[in-house]
Image (cartoon, rainbow, N blue to C red; front, top):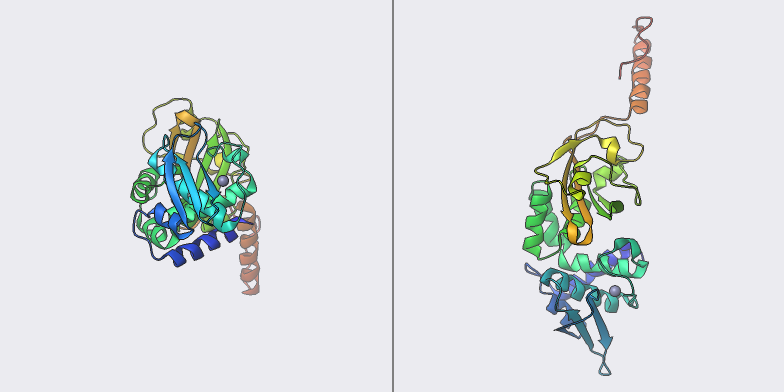
Amino acid sequence: MNDQDAAMKARKFIAEVGTPALPVLVDTYASHIGGSVSRETLGEQEDAWSVRLPNGKYRICVNCAHSSRRQRFSVCHEVAHVVLDIPADHSTPSWSYARRSPGEIACDVFAAELLLPYKLFKPRVDSADIGLAAISELADEFEASLISTGSRFATFSRELCAFVLSEEGKVRYCARSTSLRSAGAWVKPGSLIPSDTLSDRARRGDVTKGTEEVEPDQWFEDWERDGSLYEDVRHLHQWDQTLTLLWFDDADLPPAPAQRQRWGEESQGLRELDGILPWPGKSKRKR
Ligand SMILES: [Zn+2]
């Protein structure tokens, strides 16, 4: 099952349960599948487990030692296992994106949809300022983690923006807005956080304040276009996770140099058709 299928099934599930209010009540999702939630002491790394009872109902048990936001996500994740009919593979820690199995990732996608429902979340993304402060406010409003909220913020943003999650200094995941995907911007998973960027310095313990302009080719692979790129960061020392938001200040990005040259040649072709020839030696437009 791909992420898109999981997201669509989650939206269908929300429609069945009824329009949620904010913050969504995860126990209502659980009861829709005949599940009851109990909060107990589990292993430190264990988020939750669920079991089907002889009467066909489910018992969902979440780790009471975890933060309430993490517990909310865990309940939605367990609901996902039941609705998507994906067996649990909880041998790897949930905070490590790098080591997640495809089934677990599908359940995470489903859970994020339940916790930050598209219909409620998208209008708030459209009206929010860009930056991690605004994402943090949305996370508070939806009672969701900064990682889930940031990832969905970038995915649904109308701006040219990306949310990058790095672990132990390596990029693990990058969510991009539709416009940034179309522009061809790509942060390679497995690559190191670019040196001397705001994110790199935050990870090294520098106290970072505000956003900073950064060269786009420091972050994006094979990037040849101009544009003013900005970077904002939060580093979570406890898990050595770096959360980076990148966005262009431009409404439209200038085309890549190769593309610009081609356009220049085309426009000269038109001038020749008009009978006005370019001056000799000025056949190439300046970049
Ligand atoms: Zn799972």
